[in-house]
Amino acid sequence: MELIKPMLMLKYKTTLLTMFMAFSHVAMGSDLGQTLATQGNSKGATACIACHGVDGAGMAAASFPRLAGINPAYMEKQLHDFTKATRNSAIMAPIASALSDEEIKAVAAYYSKLKLITPSAQAATDDTLMEVGKKLAEKGNWPNDIPACFTCHGAGANGIGDPFPALAGQHASYIEQQLQYWRSGQRNNDPNELMKGVAVRLSDAEIKAVSAYLASLTLTAN
Image 1 (cartoon, rainbow, N blue to C red):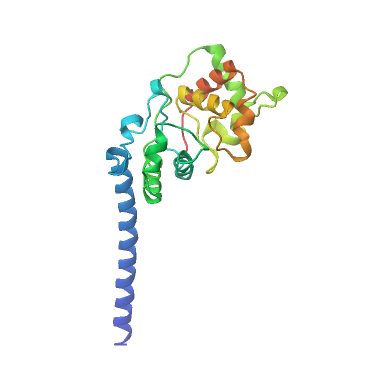
Image 2 (spheres, rainbow, N blue to C red; image 1 turned 30 degrees about the vertical axis):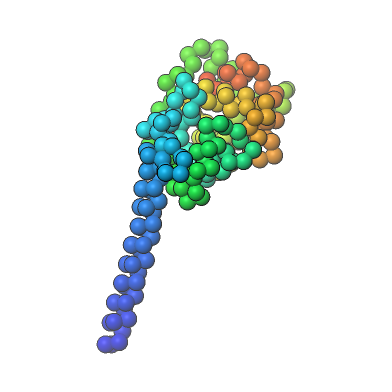
């Protein structure tokens, strides 16, 4: 009995130490993500808030996307892709290249946990435009081989898993910009060129309409 007590005490202390180390690791990762978002690092990565705002809401006028609530694995992939030729951005490429793998993971985790925001304030009010956008998002345009946005991006465009990000509440200007990039080949980092296949079949009017509609939706997924 006397031997059992010390063994139980040792096991208890070991368990507490393991839990403390795990908690510390999570806390440090969270702190690192917030530091990168608000201050950047000393290796060339500027603070994310300069373009994406203190709340991660982005900037519609400059087509800077909302980052709050974005799937962390998706964001990690995009940051890695900015360092390659698969996704081009004169602004993001040098920033992403200045981040370590640990920093990319930390900042992606930080933004994924930020409180979700309301629909974009610049959402369109043109009824005809919104009707066209709604139809494309919900039903697509099958005669022209355009699937519904919700097929891949989920009901209400709230995203499905890592490959298909939430589009609800994203700025219309950013969605429109990216669809144009998919179409022109400036962006080419999707699985099996799914988005390029969709974008090349969309007219400019359809791109504008579906972008406006998706921006008007409320993001409910985390």
